[in-house]
Length: 235
Image (cartoon, rainbow, N blue to C red; front, top):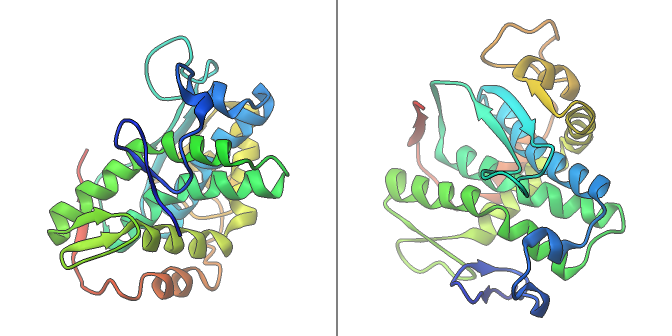
């Protein structure tokens, strides 16, 4: 697997397109608004579904109607409940799930190009920064790309863990993304219903669901990362 250092030092699996000069990420992607909105919805659904699976409470999910083009701020987000406490491998796997879900959906819909895959990576910058912070605070490690010398953790391992976990929950990701695309905003309880999963922070009418293979998949992909440390979120 190759990694590329972009002109601003951000590292991606796909090379920075020549068309990126002077263009916004969404201009580089060149998707119709309907496809862009669904792609963003899948990204956020990837985070939320793994949040449900890993006992991280989801308070709300939202997509901005202007995708952040006009007003400042992110195009979409998951608002997490508080407080929560999960093992650090689960936290970083959830962080990577957004960009990995988006990449998978582009491939399945015949929309994938290297440029769009690059955009999916670039728009996940805040997610990757969270991985950096968790590794530093909880393990005293540095995130690296393509290699993992002593004291480093390879982001390729994190991506593989996210892919493994999403594989067992993919139908739920798509169901939640469709609901988010249609409504624009969902409470945690509404999101749980759309994904047919149990909300871990707010009482939910749905029966508990634990799809088989989720825990095994992410543990297998991240087997090299051993320990019992946890990540706590208080804000």
